[in-house]
Amino acid sequence: MSERFIFTKHRCSCYNCGKEVDQVIKAVRSQAQVVCPNCGATRIFIPRIEEVGRKGLYTKIGCYDVWSLVTTAVCPHCRAKGPHDLTIGCDQFTVHCRNCDFIHFYKFNLEYIAQCPIEAE
Ligand SMILES: [Zn+2]
Ligand SMILES: [Zn+2]
Image (cartoon, rainbow, N blue to C red):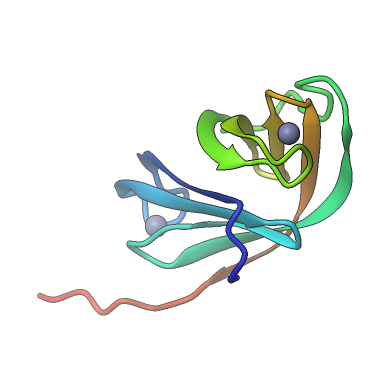
């Protein structure tokens, strides 16, 4: 992942280990991921749609924890550096450029635990 597009953090309780830590959120054009730095739980999202559309177009209601975040990024479409809306749910990861309304829609692909930490007694 040399090309950087979205890189931000969101503090919340991890669905896997239950600890409240900064979940690391990364996205490039080919992939998006959310990683818990405490337990290594990783969710991978793959791109499905890239187009200009209105905000909230692909947001499905009914997911247990939808994160709505705003982060500054350089848009690969209009090249402007500015606020991007991130909508991350259990089955989707959407990035929306506020400048040109370009949307990257990623669909949930797989989930794994990258490490198995040994608890110190
Ligand atoms: Zn965790
Ligand atoms: Zn843009």
